[in-house]
Image 1 (cartoon, rainbow, N blue to C red):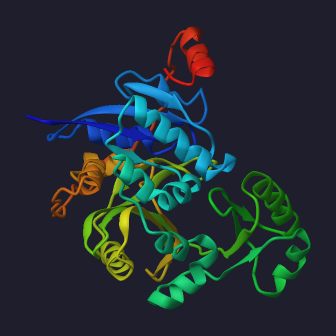
Image 2: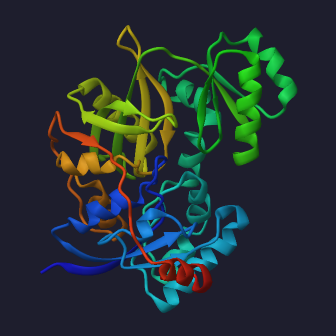
Length: 347
C-alpha cells in the first residue's frame, strides 16, 4: 500500500524556457511507494502546468521572491494551514534563498524540505566560480563580475572575444564584440540586477549531469547527458544519456567534497583535449530530469524520501542511450479557470 503525501512544487512554466516543476511531478507520480497529492505553486496565472491534465491537483498563486522572502514564506504557511503540505520542493534558483533561510521555520510548521545549505549555495554561485575551482582543484573558465557599463571597455585587457555574458540567476549570451556585451549587459541587469558575470568562452561540446546528494558526501544518483538540440534560449529540446565515467567521477568528487544536499545540475564543456570545464553548478533539479527517470533513476522520488528522512539507497546504474525530445502542445481550457486563479489566488 502506497503512503499518501502532499507535495507542493514551483516551476510550472513548461514553455520554451521550461521550469523543472512538471517533470519533477511526473517522477513523483510514478513512485511505487507514494500516493501523492500535488499542489502547484504558481507565480504567473498562465503557467501551463496549472492546466495540464493529471499534473497538479490544486494550484495556489504565490508572490515572487523579489517581493520579499518573508512575504513568500508567509504565503506558503498560509496555504499550509488550509491545505497541509508534507514536502515542499522549490525549483528555481531565485527562490531558494528564501526557503533555505526559512528551513527551520518550515520544519517547525510540519513542512519538510531537502535543500542545500546557504554556504553551499553561495560557494557554487556563478560569481564565485573561480574561487570554487581553486578550492577544489577543478577546471573552470576565467570569469569576473561587472556592475557598471563603463567597465565593459576594459574587458579586452583580460578576455578574448567571443566571451559569455551571464546573469546571476539565469540567462547567458555569447558576445562577439564590445557592443554586444553592452546590449546583453543592459538586458540581463534590467531583468536580474547586477552583478553580471563575464566568462571566458570554452569551445567544445556542451554536456550536463543531473545529480542528487544526501548531504553526507554520498551521491544518490547521477545521470550524464549530451544536448541533441538546443533552443535559442540555450535550453535542451532533446538530449541523450551518455556512458561517460569521467563525467560521473567529477560529479562524485564535487558532491563528496561539498557534502552537497539536494538536487544539482552540472553544466560542463568537454574541450577538444577531452578536458571537462565546469561552466555552472545549478543548485536544484534541472528541467530535463525526466530523462533520468526514464533511464532508471527516479531522482524526484528519491528527493521526497530524503526530505522525509527515509532511507535512500544510491542508484546503481542507468540506461545509456535513452533520449528525450520535447514538444509543443496546445492546451484547451476555459477562461473561467483563468479568472478563478486570477481573482481567488487558487484553482
